[in-house]
Length: 256
Image (cartoon, rainbow, N blue to C red; front, side, top):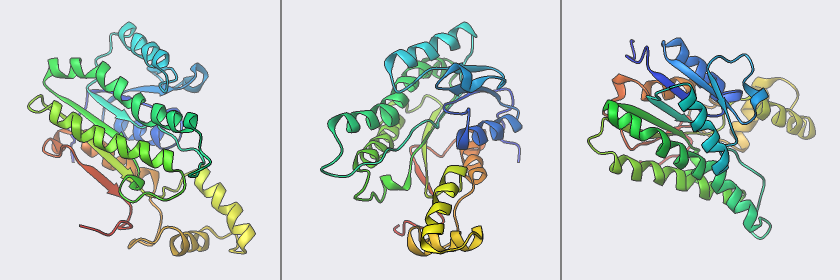
């Protein structure tokens, strides 16, 4: 299927590693000119057209935008992949912890949207995809500051969709459940060792599904599955999908 986005320019935040890197590679395979992003300059060495800056801060976002302007880059597609969680519990997370999660998962997105939307409006076309979590649908008691921030990100997307009505710009959120990343796998292998689950990944994954992430597909998502959905939402083909929060969770969240 031709996604119709060859020749477009995409900024993918946090694309120096992890799921963001897979998303960037997937878009590049569709003929998109990807601008890579890392928090530090050394993160993006050898990545091609790239920018850097700690977008959890106003200064870092300003720095990134200035680099885009110096490149004379017009961003048609913005994938707000960057975001992070931190450990925390009610009664133990400080006000600084809550503000940190909001900066990293909400304001980083808001700042970059404000920066690139004027150019998208001039073109009469644009795609914004924000990476969320199924925790915005079904939060846990742990990490309340993180889930609250991701919930705010989801509502940000809906609000922005309404603001951009008739502009040719769509805004969607992609909310994965557990994704098999090297970090997640390493963490669960340690847990498996402690619980006596063995070292066979298929058996460990079965235990994860059984004890922590029950879902109808009975496995974890791959990073590629998330990236392919993001790429589709960035495409011409997805022009009538707008203001959505789409779960990639194998059926874990079970409500209509």
